[in-house]
Figure (cartoon, rainbow, N blue to C red):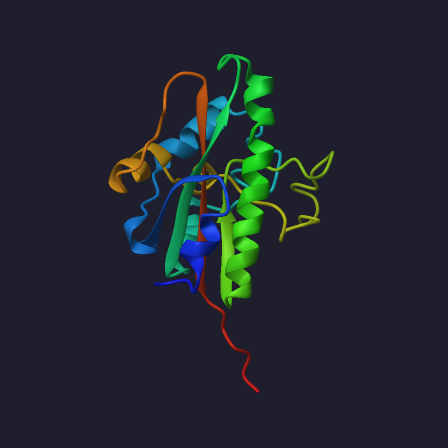
Length: 184
């Protein structure tokens, strides 16, 4: 699926690599969600993380309800890869970039859903599980929350996963489909 004017648009931004793919090419894996549950402090505390994102089957159905996905990366440089605070602080620029790209896609008449790098930190305290998300249109679940194994997807798409040195690659997947016109 072509996005009108996309190649010209995307060259204005610091996107390292991108691919437009059919969502049928995206598989979800239980093993990545097990890592979320066992190793992530955000598991069970936010709508952007499991189990708040739904079952793995629901996540797979959500992904496959869109016809295509824009999978892309951006690069950030840090002084020390082991400084988690510094590394995570670079994520915000990638999220801003993701929003800009999604805005363009929406202006082209596409319905979009973002899977990105975050477990959501919009609100100081998440409403999960007692009340609905305050900002569902701003909250971007991370790729792993939906069972997407980023390393496998980069291999499948022949993209770089790691650049070495003090470089970090951040990844987003903007799922998209033509907007459904409301029936009159």
